[in-house]
Length: 488
Ligand code: HEM
Image 1 (cartoon, helix red, strand yellow):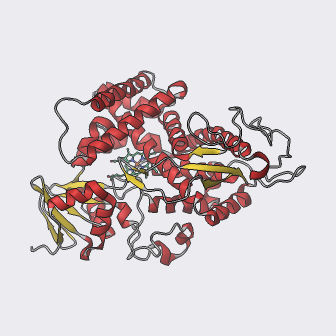
Image 2 (cartoon, helix red, strand yellow; image 1 turned 90 degrees about the vertical axis):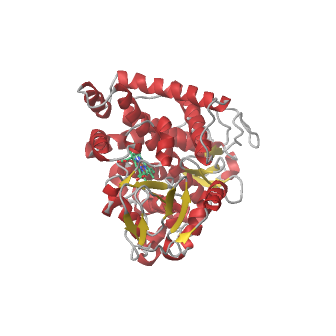
Image 3 (tube, helix red, strand yellow; image 1 turned 120 degrees about the vertical axis):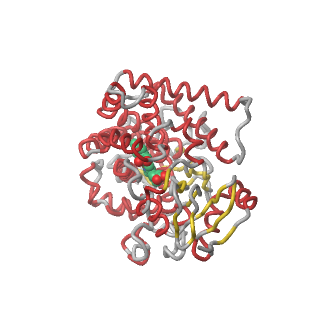
């Protein structure tokens, strides 16, 4: 069958990928038919965009498409040789069944309680930060009045911070602390990364990392940066390890040692099931550790960046933030949200969905065709690689009305969602048998986080101007997201 797909020269495609990978996928989305082809490293690389084509690969003909593709192979030493990067087949099915207990209804309820508990700490810190900032004037309160939290001026709130005082760090307004943060501000990227890591540890491993959190966070950052730099290079690594390679390996050794200690003393049903499988010969000790490593990365890196994007979008859209706050006030009336409240908070969920539409953290996916196939009339040879980017699909003007706008209410407007066009237009957790098993866990955590903190604090950007998206291992903000907090 003759191909009508748009052809790109390999040198052009690789250059464009290195310079602006998101732009490359957006350009492909605009070619007629939404399919472009290049030839690289002796095989065809097919770029697709249309939801029908993605559904074909991920669901309708999923047995013909393996995850044995370069982006997952490269990630194996880092993500662990587990479920997330398993090529497919019986190995994948065995692993998928093993992790299922972590996502049962009972497990989700337990995870929500842990989330509520961790959020109480973050809420205390954010409230203290908001109160410390600008003290008298930031809230616009006159002497002797009380604010929305019911605190009179000169009184002390639950965090022990008096209104009109500076916080425990002793920082006066207008100064910055050792982390470079101005009084009254937070680094939302770092805050959400730490929260997500703590949640992943407690939920998956039944452990609090506490004193090791900072070290593990630094190691994870180093590892993510190293792998991202590696992915951006179109050639194999040098045989002689560079200092950066050595730092990466040392960080991986420390992370693996932490995981090994957790496996030695199983505290969750998930770990107990994996260890039992190992003892019955289903997997090696190394595979058990790899599985946990993969789940830990898959769970916390995605979650942290999704939440950071939510805050960035809310901070730059005060009207959406006010609508959100109105919903939270009406439903919760000042008390912290619980899992049972989430069905009554539709706008909160829409904020999260809209953030995932504009900034899908899993921004690229790839499969290898096992046998020959046809996609959208284009012949696919066995061994071809098929790649697509939800980032480009989620901003396609044929699918979404006002695609570049942050408009959570679009999900109440059938024309705005693209739902009439395709029910899989928005699929931040993937589609079909290999879709994300952690989707409900992730959504519960995200909605509880936004509801808890947005009810107490109003967020605004410290610096004006757009924040770029860095298509790294996941789609992360290109710079630290500094937010100014004030009490509602
Ligand atoms: C906002 C948060 C999250 C997003 C956006 C997300 C997104 C995704 C996507 C798109 C896939 C499919 C990738 C593909 O088909 O190539 C996936 C797979 C996966 N995710 Fe998530 N995820 C999130 C959170 C989590 C959490 C919390 C966990 C576990 C604790 C998790 C565990 C996994 C695993 C194990 C897979 C591989 C499943 C398989 O291959 O069968 N994810 N995720």
